[in-house]
Length: 434
Image (cartoon, rainbow, N blue to C red; front, side, top):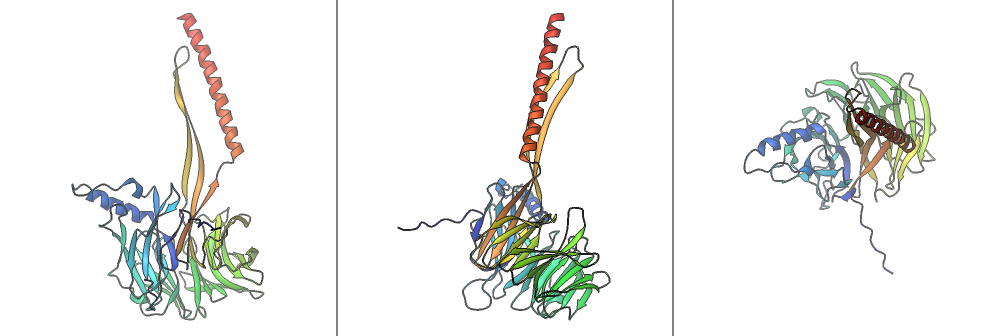
């Protein structure tokens, strides 16, 4: 009996090149492209932007990857794809592709305010700047990319950079090198803030705190070092214990706004997440997440969820409040998960409207207009893999439980019923004395 092939779900697509990096395109970029397109559409030769390409109805993602410098025949490129929120689907093919010839874009960071993209190239070992552009040839998806005329001299021919990051407001850029160097610059002036040539044996990861005052850098396997950005002083060195191998680090915050630091550690039992106090720099807890190694890690913008990816292609999403597993997706990808990225949080509402009533007679004019809004927070996690696939996983957290929602609706219905009975009594009294 021939086994039927199960088609991939619409939120999983293959784009033809091994993917190493992923990020969500900032809304400021989409709005600027939309405004340019709206201006152009005033001409008779141009059509207005279709509804499917409106920023509020969909999101764009940027990917980087390729086959490297060899003769594999796999191109090196930076890609754009469209994610439709309503149908929870990725575009079947990239909506834009910018080839980088023999240069493999290995790591990437996107400026949060829409200035552009920086890619760390594996060959040659330099960083390239890319500008957002308008794709004139496209009918629907007008967003594109182009190689910038700006040259990042401070990151040219300095060796392969294994980690790149902007701070939240986009005024500071950090780069961590394969040679163990840590460089931090003011943006866009590229004035040097930190230039530590021996920060680690090699820099695997780095991340800014939410306020941009601290940066954490992670060496090959450990330890982690925490730096004060303004003074360029190392505040703490966080050592690994019991043969732990550190692989990722992220600042975040817990429910009461307290800042914490998460470090992913490989142990004999599997992949764990270690939580650190950012005042005393002592360990708070350690939680085993997977029996497999964790090779990709990220944290949602509000700190509520942690995402882990494994070499076997599994995605594990953890609730940071209790460190319990919220979602586990086996075989999310067929290959090693190389990067994860949470989308900015968005609020969606379900609206219930009750009509407006007006009462006349002995009572003063009374107008009633009832609206119930049941809100939820909608998050999406993008993941990429060496198997050339990209996937968007939707994580929805309901703000109101089902029981409380039905109770609220029952109360409203009872109030409306009582209101109608009262209106009917007033109407009978009015007719009696009219």
